[in-house]
Amino acid sequence: MQKFTPELINKIITLLNTEIIPAEGCTEPIAIAYAAAKATQILGKKPERMHISCSGNIIKNVKSVIVPNSGGLIGIGVSAAMGAFAGNPDKELMVISNTTPEQLIEVRAFLDKKSIHIQHANVSDKLYIKVKLFAGNESASVELKQRHTNITEIMKNDQIIFQAPHEEKNTQEDPASILTIQLIYDLAKCIDIALIKNLFDKVILLNSAIATEGLAHDYGVNIGRNIQKSIENGFYGNDTRNHSASLASAGSDARMGGSAMPVMTTAGSGNIGLTASLPVITFCRERNKSDEQLYRALFFSHLTTIHVKAKIGRLSAYCGPMCAAAAVAGAIGFVNDFDFQTISNAIINTLGGVSGIVCDGANSSCPIKIANGTYAAYDGIAMAANGNVITVGDGIVGQDVEQTINNIAEITQKGMDVTDKVILDIMTRDDI
Image: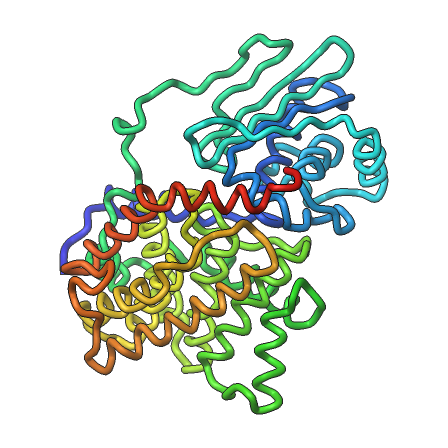
């Protein structure tokens, strides 16, 4: 086992606290609301009209998902109006968490005026949002890039009042670049629990709560409840694997269905955060693992998810929760004290099995993908525990776990760009 310097551990903890944060609702519409709320703050008054420009990946992740606290409304314009008339930019991804009935009346009145222009931005960034607001002769705009709260430009009356430094992308150090599965495995064995307990207590509390909400009420197509009912009527087995899939997908049901309950996101996504946490929590609780074992397993799962997702990119045509599914397979092996090679094989098996699942935006099908990813995680670790791993050279599987992750990244970045465009074209044939 390698030794870790205080400097390295501090970098890891900072990375975790940056990548695992609370958000209310799907992060893409909330990012638009955040930009609009910030622009309203700069404008100093409520807008009379809006111009919104978004990348394709933002459009597809906002088009079909219900905006929380909106009364069941969906869409880019709704997200921006909620931010402008009901948002507090100081709360970042919780920007519209305190919406009042009076503010919602203002939102609906503004939407009725049809004063919002939306366009598809012709930009290279997968995550790009620019919201420009107008009131009389005044205007204000806010631009976001690469991360959901990363403001890169603020303008008032067409004058720049803030601009992030222009740096070449390849010269910026990615904080996640220090990660490998070996490092994560070794550090998960010895990390001081006091450094991670508070963060993962929030993960356990918030993500478990929204899963319970999804099981208790009618959201979307009710994937979590369908699995639960199938367990109860004997169609599915009453086992940890099915319980894990039920809870993880139920959390997504509620989140995609407009629940105002917050989740702890991971790598910019609530669905990824739910997938990285709930199957691990369920496994540990049902197998009577200690709190310390649970914290270490969550540490492994989330850090592995961040590692894989960083290779793929913030938004892409690759379904993000599949990164977390691979991490869950490894985390279950970790909490069972399997050796490093078995855990690596579990990750390889899972990635090899789910590598073709595409992201067609945030919508009611996300919980189905999460359930499938959870099942694949259990299959991946079960295969590895029985001494089986997908053969090197079969499909996208590389010489080891890191090469396999790199192969997935290469497929996503080089091979799925056209796929992304075709998905967006299908989704926006009628309107944005």
